[in-house]
Amino acid sequence: MSELSRRMAAEFREAPEAVRRQAQDLPAPVSRLVARIKQKPPAVVVICARGSSAHAATFGKHLIERHLGIPCADAAPNIASVYHQRLRLKDQLFLSISQSGRSDDLVESARMAKEAGAITAAIVNDTESPLADISEIVLPMGAGPEHSIAATKTFVASLAALLRLTAAWMGDPAFTKPLERLPERLAAASDLDWSAALGALSKATSLLTLGRGPTLAIAREAALKFKETSDLPAEAFSSAEFMHGPVSLVANHYPVMIFAPTDAAAKGLRELAADIRGKGAAVFITDHGGAAGSLPALEPDHPDTDAICLIQSLYGLLVRLAERRGTNVDQPRHLRKVTRTR
Image (cartoon, rainbow, N blue to C red):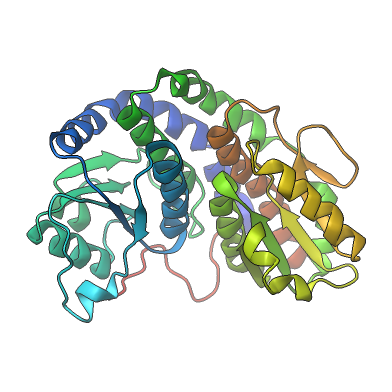
């Protein structure tokens, strides 16, 4: 392995330990937040994030709407930072997600929400950041320092923190065992061999990534990671949205990566994979059964933790793909670790 890929290759394998630490570090602040929420249950949850954290927000939206039945909206940070408009958020939950906690528009949005009477919470890796300071309750990711610019372990830690929050809010013990098993499963997912996709992706000029339900967030983050680490343009879609126009992109040998969930949405993804394979696409779909042309996945355990394991497997492929394409996964061009936007 070259020096170009050593840092990311090491850091993504630290994700299991980060998730394991959360079992000790998150229960107390999560309990405080859940107690605060239950005093006056919110009618809506607003999540504010950028970049990889915005894809974690997509996962959070799925969890909150799927398991709690509460509408979840994406915040537009420029409403606070550029247009200086206060939203009507009294007694609602405003949840920020950020690795650094230093993006100005996120901080200003959290401040606006707090002044508007919202319950403000932040899932953040830097617990001494401005975002942590302005938020009423801080949920630490616990990922530790991440030096590679492309987020890996912090993304996984964000997803796990969202799942822990949802489980505590529901009070459903059915989540307990899958969360306990998640660190071990992430370690196993790190070693799965996705090299079946290397040949097509190393020569590709673009690709599509698809998901649905708990894997839509994974597809979106995968598309970003292909762009960041291999200079490979990628677009992510819900499998349903894909059929409303983007399917016209499919041509002979065009690569399509499908992150199959292990819940009720799985059947539709498998049917779609067969359909676009028939149209000539080079389809790579995650599958625990070892079907021809598939990318190996762990045996199903819980649909939400299964989805988190898929992104962990992708990281190993990204390191190898960058080596083939000659890009620096640890220092993507034009990017910095902390992005300050307003």
